[in-house]
Length: 315
Image 1 (tube, rainbow, N blue to C red):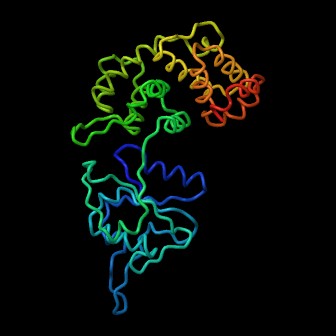
Image 2: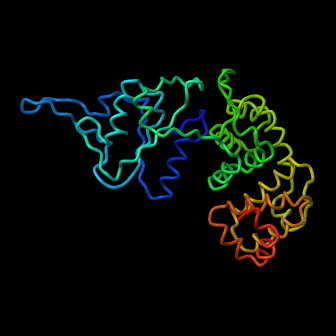
Image 3: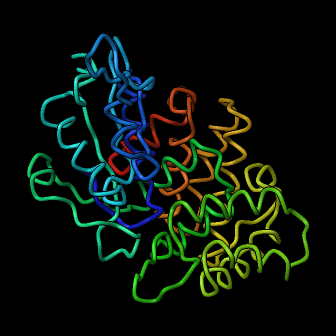
């Protein structure tokens, strides 16, 4: 059972791990279900009661059940789930051996997400793990998922804003990995939009305070030279920290679109000329996160000498 505040990607995490190890995924969105949806609808047959097998139950293969938003499900549904996680069956329907893996996700009562207290007999049948957010882990996902470089650069500069959730504040919009992903889509779809419109849209995703900081950061990021100019030495790198993070994010985004040994070599050289060694390591670490790029970087002529000096920080 994975516990955590809203919007941190608990369900997405399970799907990603399952995909990496080659397992199919069956997501049961329990908040929409009733007990009869799980155990099947009864009907008379030859003087006996028979339960129709729910169509979503697999017959063969290997996979994992995601019991999504389990604490938000009706207590009667949670009771039905307890049989699933203990006996691998739902009423008369047995779960194939290859599918006897169950991961539940949900918010706690303190998160004010319309949850019910989990029955003790169900809670005692699970291993309970808290899920926390980490900016570096999130950036690895964000680079691979095409999140806007402006968002990645901003959260590199202001990592504490990746998640700010206070259930007592009763705010509709607040910073979370999910709402920053929405902000990324806003930035990508409303390029060139009026600043007041952009601020209002971003504020609707991450809240007033975070939106004000992010829109201010965007002004800095959009005044920077093009990433190819920074790599070719035709423009000087900024020295102000927020601008450096924005420049790093734009260069990594450029590399993700031009995966080439020549570009990788330029990144290696630039990383050694930045005002701070820390920023150079940051640039290489983020470049190595680009999907299918590690082999390209490791084959670049300057990699061995760079790795001899800084490799311990990124490998």
